[in-house]
Image (cartoon, rainbow, N blue to C red; front, side, top):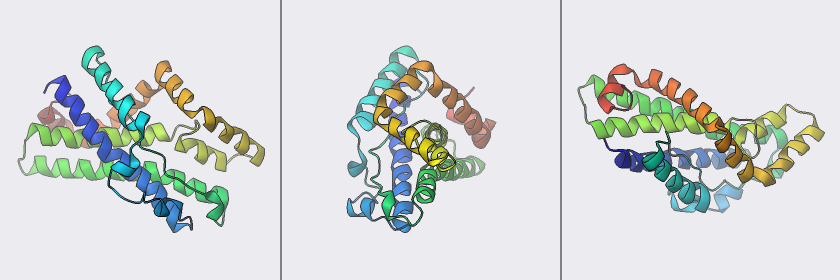
Length: 221
């Protein structure tokens, strides 16, 4: 499998992974009383309303070029953040805790589901390299999104989770850093944090995929 084809499949798998992540945020917020995402038409699996110019287009294309010419290990990105108004929640901080955990939880469930489908296909003798590779990418990128978003750094989901357990004045101080969100994420990329997260996601993905599937899909080994 060529690097270019692998990169294009990565972009497709990324779209499959990021949309349910955002929809899960909005769905849980809606169930907790916040109609904002639903009113904005964001509780849909249609990718168009979720496209973010930087996270959904420029960054994945840039990383795809880095992968093609410099061997960068993964194509990464994000969708347009789901609008949430925590003042609709009966418990503002508790509501944000559940909403923030919903996205990573959706990705973990997606990884488990894709792994189950892939293992089932391998068990019945389906050995199509492209199908197995795509499912393996969904497993890997779902885990990568879950782990990366759980980092306790604004504006990632982990910062809202951390805020729930902090004193009020510390919560506010932490969330004020959200205005520097893109700069923080870019710094994490430069510092190699994403590489560490990728290695952790890859290790878990390998266990879910198993040696036989990994060899058949030619992603590992």
